[in-house]
Structure formats: structure tokens, C-alpha cells
Image (cartoon, rainbow, N blue to C red):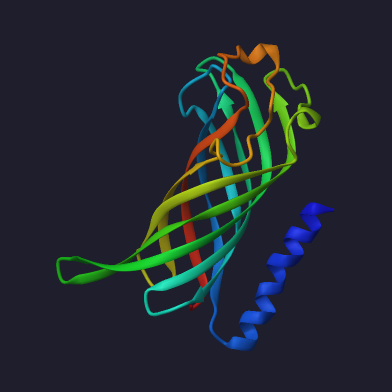
Length: 203
């Protein structure tokens, strides 16, 4: 029910932007490398995908609001085996500040982005296939920051760092014994996203 309300709120932004005739948007896809702080396993070894769409709403000449909706995989892994794989619907609400970057005689826009992310858990499994969905929080709140470089009018390439920090909602308040708990209470997503953006509509 929560996920349906979340998606409905995001979709309501589209007709509002149509009325204002000040909108853009497109599709995005990329790679996520992640770890889970609190499981006793370090290193960004878990690779997953991130696919979705985004909209852009100009607030000024340089500031833009960029809501997104994505399906993405997070989790944790050792060099030998997968520890945890989680799949989420993630909804970032980013504010983007545009800077012009001059390379030679060509100017490339660079967007500095930051904002909160609401994640809704779709499923979670450990390395032997056990379903951990019921032992994890259904929703988590994260922060995310990064940049996107515009390679052309339609294509941009971005890198972001995301974390579900202590001051926000942890992934869960207790961990399975197999995760070799180190005394840290809770588990927290810690990840980097490399994304390609296709701007279908001009902002």
C-alpha cells in the first residue's frame, strides 16, 4: 500500500509539470556497487543494476528539482560468496545545481546533485537463497549526492554516493548470526551508482 501511494505521488508530478509547461525528463540505467555497514563484511563488492526514469523541474537558471523512480539492487558480498542481495523501488528527490565546465573550446554543463531517497524493499535473499524480506525494514531513508556531466544535449553520465545514515532509518535493527555482527546496531546501505541518463524531453 505504501509503495502504491509513493508511486502515485511521483506520477502526480507529471501532469503538474505539463500544466506549467516547464519540465523535462527521460530514462536512466546503470551499475550499483554496494556494501552493508554492520554485517562485518567490508568492501564495495556487491554489483547490481539500477533502472528507472526521472523528471526535471527548473527552479531557476541554475537550480533544478529532479525527482526519480528506480528499481535497484543493493547488498553485500565477500570475495567468495554473496552475503545479501536486496531489491528496492527507490525514489530520490534531488536538487541539482548546474555549473559550466570549459574543456578546450567546448562548454559542458555539470550538475551537482544532492537530496533524500526513500527506498521500498521488494525482496531480500542471502547467499544460499533464504528469503530475508520479513526480517528487514520495508522502507528506509537515505541521503545521496553526486554529479552528472552532460556529454550532449540528450546524454549525460553521472556518479552518486548514497548512504542510509544513523540519523535516518536503518535497514534493520538486528542482523542474522551468519552476518558476523561486529557490535554495530543495525545495518546501513552504503553504495555508489554509475548511471547513464537519456534526456527524452528538454528541461
